Image (cartoon, rainbow, N blue to C red; front, side):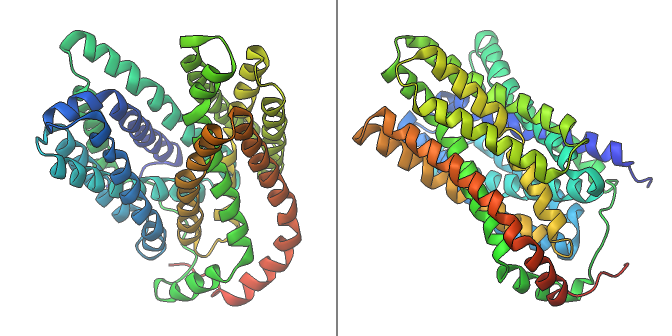
Amino acid sequence: MNQLSARGTMAASCMSFFALGLITAALGPALPDLAANASSNLATIGAIFTALFLGGFITQLIAGPLNDRLGQRPVLLVGIGLLAAGICGIAISHALPLTLACALVAGLGHGAIDVSTNVLIAEVFAARSASALNLLNVFFGVGAVAGPAIAGLTLRVWGTALPVLWLGAGLMLVQAPFVRRLASAPSVAHHDDLATPGLALLRSPLLWVFGGLLLLYVGTETGIGGWTTTYMERTTTIGAAAALVTAGFWLALTGGRVAGALIGARVAAGVLLRLSLAGALAGAVLLAISPGNAALTVVAVILIGFCFGPIFPTALSIVTATFRRAPGTAASVVVAMGSLGGMLLPWAQGTLLESRGPSASTVLVAAGALSMLAIELGRGLLNGRQSTVVSCQLPHATDN
């Protein structure tokens, strides 16, 4: 069976991420259908997101080490099967426990595909991984925009949003035959030696620096996406248009990843990351000093979204390049820490908004942006020393 070229591998991976975004964003519009099928209510069926997060978090922890030991292809095949089965189960389930169990299964698949695909693209395009990963993650955003749009269409035509879930599962299954033909990432260690890199990574201060950066990033991004509509409603008079500002944030974030893909081909990943973090801090400061001013708030939210776009894929590019002998394990650790941030910081932001007022919640955003930039600027202090430590502790690269 002929192997796909690097471009073919990128095309197949982009289709997978488009399907991931489609499924993730379509679940919201489908909640009323799912609640009716399970004889439940919206508040209860919302636990589907908790189950998805839990499943994703589990596989984010284990998918990377499995990638390093087995390669990306087996993990991707299992992930596709789990995600497709889970989503189909969600769509046909008529019992709440079964719906939540299927959501957990879908989350397991989602986490495996997310980590494995990012690591595969980072390795196949090692010389320009920042650009390649930004391009890959653009398609998740495109899918996230397409999901609710298609759901709105099916609701008008058929009165249900469930066909979008079937579409997403189908798109995933279409990828399965191509997985065995994906370009191979370079192998850098004997499989039997991978326990040593794993232990060495966990002792690496630099790994936890990256993890802290992504914890703050994912938590801040999720918090802005989750609370911007409420913030706008409480501080401005734009009313129903507040939801459009949130949509603008996600569109700007996708646009930022397009820019990251273009710029990342011309500048070093570290430069792109620092530029993005500096721009995000400028937007966060503007957000914090402009409560009540609708125009400035909209500009701030769009600026933050645009500058946030390249941060996750670019940081992941640097992680996989830094820990070359166990990139999957390193990616698993930092992505899992990002998920913890997504669970904790939006809750903290909502608590501040309710208890201390809208302005307090924007101070948290600014503090998060400042902390991320400080972490990135301080990374250079560890980088040289850590490179020496890792090269001494990890086994030498060998060809398999």
